[in-house]
Image (cartoon, rainbow, N blue to C red; front, side, top):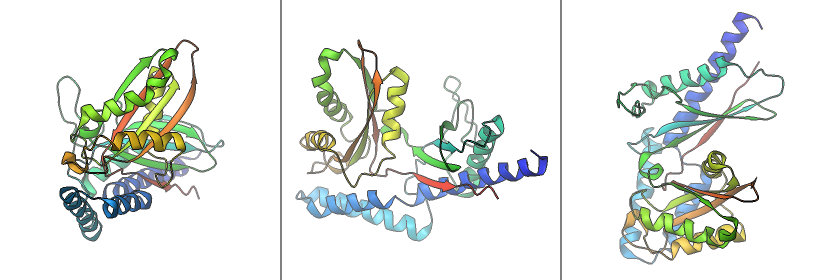
Length: 279
């Protein structure tokens, strides 16, 4: 590949990452906005109705002003789909990081990324392992940015169950939200990973947050109804809707193991995808 072409692709990936980050932190996906609107219309608790009014106003102001929905613009979780004819090289990762650096200054994003021990802030939301990049094969080159705030991430959980306890998956999901209470700024979206290994189960749970929340399977709806019976409500102030949706992704696992992870996301289930044009 000629140097000029490589630089052009690098710049395109960086620009797509910056654009996806901008869209993600300012504009909620349509399915999430619809779910919030439906929940607001159905809410019977007066205090909760007031919280929904604040949330919907927040969304409108962010869109009109072109500013982030929340002061916590999260840490950057990025999903790349790579066509079969495109080599997976370090330059692709570098281009994504460059896009996040640019987005931090241009949007702006709050610089949230620090060294885990010294707590030194890198100032541009990049660092060792950041952005967190997940790569999958696809027919197009796309960049998806999923900003993940600390309030919701901090109450996420994983457990390694024995297969004999598989009927307790629902209990674990509900217990996760019961312990979280109002900390993750409900109404939440819960991503649930079931199966795989210790690490892949957690990745499944996070990736489940990218699924459309307009529809739920019978199993997902059962989990969501169980969470909503907690009555935690918007911002933990009580109400009918604690979870907008529960989305589940599964993977095959060891016969002696049943990993289960719950990745909690606040009402601002932010994510956006931009396709990278290669010509």
